Each structure stands twice: as C-alpha cells, then as structure tokens.
Amino acid sequence: MKLKDFISIGVVVALVATVALLWLSPGGINRAPDVAMQSIDGRMIQMSDYQGKPVLVTFWATSCPGCLKEMPHLIELHHAYGPRGLNVVGVAMAYDQPSMVVKLVKQKSVPYTIVLDLDSKIAQAFGDIRLTPTSFLIAPDGRIVQHKIGDLDLTKVRQHLDGWLS
Image 1 (cartoon, rainbow, N blue to C red):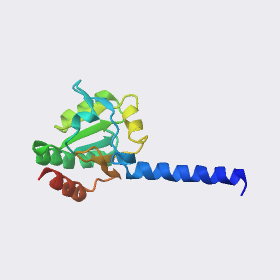
Image 2 (cartoon, one colour):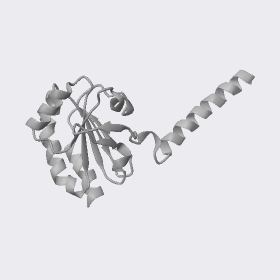
Image 3 (cartoon, helix red, strand yellow):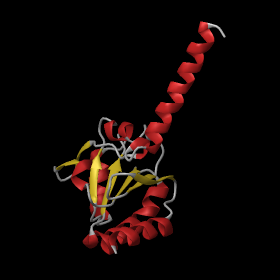
Image 4 (cartoon, helix red, strand yellow):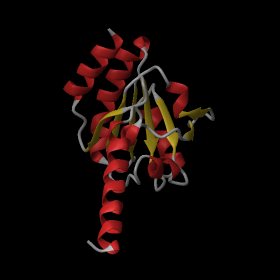
C-alpha cells in the first residue's frame, strides 16, 4: 500500500469514529441548542432555563394555516401538562411582523410563551428552520426526542409527556 492509501484509510476511520462518538454520546447531535430568546412580553429566556423539564418548541407564522390549526392543540397541551412541568414555546418566524404576532396571540388567548425570532438566530440554532409548523419535543435531559415538520403527532407527544411527568 502506498502512503496515500494509508492516509485515506486514516481519514475515513477518523470520520467514522467522530460520527460514532457524537451519535453515542449523551448529548450528541440530538441535544437542543442553548439559545437565548426574548418573549413578546420582554422576558429573556435561555433554553437551559428549562433544564429538568420537558419543552415543546414550535416554529410558526401568522400566515401559516397549519400553524393556526395546531394552536388549539398546543393550548390544550399547555393546560393539561403545564402545571406538571411542560413548557410550550412558540417561535414566530423572522418574516412575521411582530405587531401581527402580538395581535394574533391576544386574539387566540395563547397562554404559552411566544418569542420573536427577529434575526433568525433561533431558527438557525435549531437547524436553519424554514418550514412551518416545525416542532421539537425536548426531554427533561435536553435531548430532542421528536422533530416534526408539519402536523404534530399529538399521540406520541402525550406518550412522552405522560412518561416524563407521571
């Protein structure tokens, strides 16, 4: 074998080892990003503030019919599981006008936390989210256990929440 072949094999082995290490590590590639957010009522929030509690993060827009259809279900989850520890965070996309977001949140009496992603940093931290609705269910230990583009699988969400919050 030539030196070039040894180097190529070494690079492949190193890449496989790195991917395996990330995949098998407790945080790994499935860990929620510790991103800073500001709610529409002015509170500063860090994802790490929710450590030890489950979080449902949903990216949405006022112009998204699926997002508006999903809102009553998110409100229901908030009422059912919020007192037991669930935090629901709705992230309004950067292209959404803040005044429209605030108006809709008041109109729908949304009780859970809504944040504005004015500079797309939250969307970027979660993998450059562009489609809505996109949701992430985050376990109390910070792992992302469900990532869904489109309608949320409420049955799976409830199963996880019942297991964590029983």
